[in-house]
Image (cartoon, rainbow, N blue to C red; front, side, top):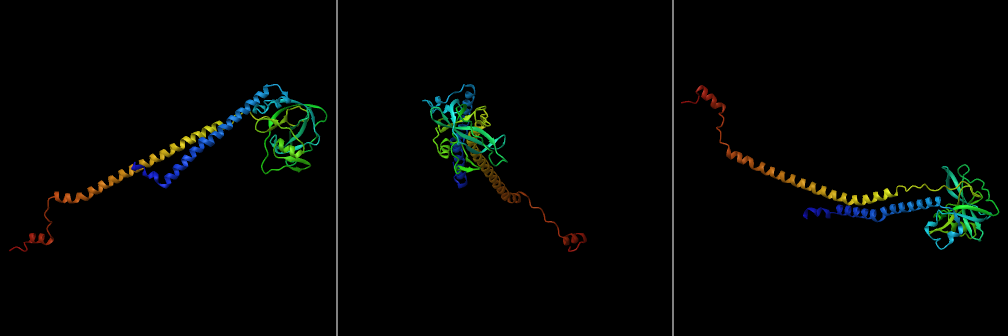
Length: 299
């Protein structure tokens, strides 16, 4: 256990906390977020596919006992009544064929007196910055076919305004449009938020119909699985770093032991060599060699 005491150092403790926090977020926030979006998208696509195959029903049926069911959105309905005059509201920041545009809203009074919000479709902006002249919807009794859509909610910090002679908003929301128009608008029950009608093609008063979303599940499932993988890989990566640190410490310890052994051998070898080697006679000096050669110093 003493080998693991380095894990108590501040740097390792901070790294462990960060890895644990990241893995926790992956499993509890990030992966569920993406997987939830995948579920919602798949649910939406199924509702759209079902609505394409189903025959339209009278709008009164969506106000029944099951009207709050989330399956209400995207249903095809028919409604009889008349458009209310002077009820045009433009929705900014829309696109038509890749160019700036506006969504055109109006109100439609049913035969039973309820007033619904209707999305008449898209129009292109003039010079990419201002709305064109918007003709009023047809007068008199009308029978329309549309899809039920859920309100988008109110965009924070983007209040309604009047520009170029038209009331303009940034999102389609039944409550906001009721306030802008100064008249009660009945929201179609769609579960989370009240809904409105989105006109189908070839209907009275329609412009370019707002296209249906692509029936594509998107990348949310793969993103969710990636976050799960990251949550698993992060602790494994930390474990690898701990193993690498232990391995490096073992190498350093082994290298230190080898160095100490070599130092010990180097310190003892000269003395042992001196004791083991016999003493050799000293080399004769120059004077001795000359005396030997010329007989100097002899008696």
